[in-house]
Length: 275
Image (cartoon, rainbow, N blue to C red; front, side, top):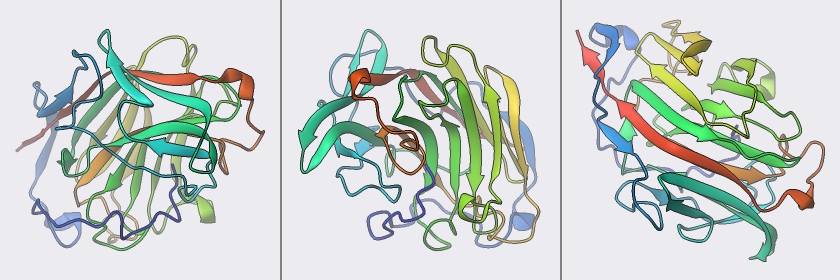
């Protein structure tokens, strides 16, 4: 989501998971493989608001660093589970000075991870003005404000550019404001009418992005320090549907599309195997 103005005070948390302080060169050797049973998952096999033991919410309508137009609400208003699927719905309605509502779900302090395989099966909203994302932010912001501590976008899509899926990593050395971001784009037919599997394999020396098990993205650790690779600290997952914004709203917002939703069949996290 390219949160270049994300507020650090709201994001700082106590370090609950030990991790290497310096570069990944100090990390123990790892294998490029993962456990076969998820260490954390939500299959959405229940009904009602999302599971509060797994999900929290970023709430508010301050634009989120991207001049977004929606007000993010807590679970139950724009995020609900039924028939085995999580639905995050963007609505055309007034709330707290904004003309749209949506939800931004987070696993912060309920699912924080250092390395692993992250697999999300989702169907995306359609329509000009939508900006859904499946992504990760640092839990502790150990290296400083965005983009110093990093961001991982497992899936981003803007409605005016239907079916083009973006996978991106942002760091102090590589981010969009200076046009150096590490990114890949792939055309995926029926992104908004069928479910597709979006996956990130995050290892100490490389991260790879996949869509339907086809590798689309690769970013290697250069071992030059945190400015290029801050990804030796724990991150958490985010699921959201933004409305408008610097990217999603570049061609305006079509109010006729609302309500529109991202549907998620499951979220699964697999632990990386130690060598």
